[in-house]
Amino acid sequence: MAPDLYAYLLDLAFQDWARWRAAYLFEKSRWERADPADLQRLDGLLVNMERAMRDFMLVVAQRETDSPPMSTALAELR
Image (cartoon, rainbow, N blue to C red; front, top):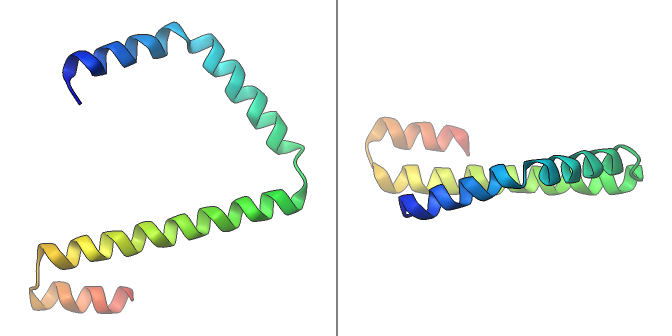
């Protein structure tokens, strides 16, 4: 990301801090009153995302090196 674009987005974030904070607090309170089934679905989604990230990291690590110690470590993680 270009430094000037990064600075611009950061400036926008600070300008809208109160609005972002209010939205966050609203969403947080809404989830605290959520249906338990919805929270279970959210937990399931988070678990699937963690698995996908782990699998992606394994593929990246495997492509970065094919050394025997790394191959052994990857096999143990699977």
